[in-house]
Length: 134
Image 1 (cartoon, rainbow, N blue to C red):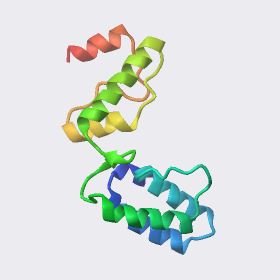
Image 2: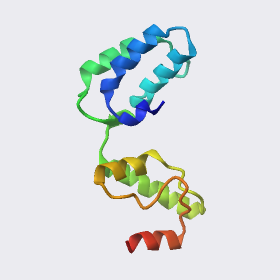
Image 3: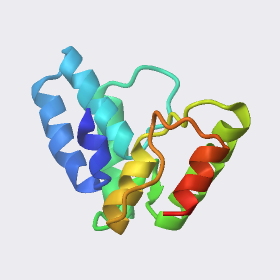
Image 4: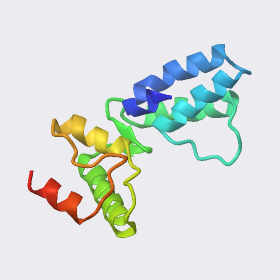
């Protein structure tokens, strides 16, 4: 579900309400997965609403719902840039595509500047040096 790309925990109560309506269906599972995409629920088993709901209700009282979160921590452009740079360096070293989509998109949205790499970017010396000269 694309809802995890909102980064806003304010979506969680709505997702939980919908999960109650669709309890017992595959849609309930997808809605719980969407909550986990916003703020990871660390569990090894398949989660059911009765187990998940108390966790997220408690979470909403502990964290600032005004902040944006990425993988369970407040989103900070510097941390995401570091992760992108590490991923790009690894992709260049392995001579493969970047295979990273959310972080470049977020950085482009926040900065207003198009990120020089995207999911399918094959990172080699030509790509790196041409993006540095822009």
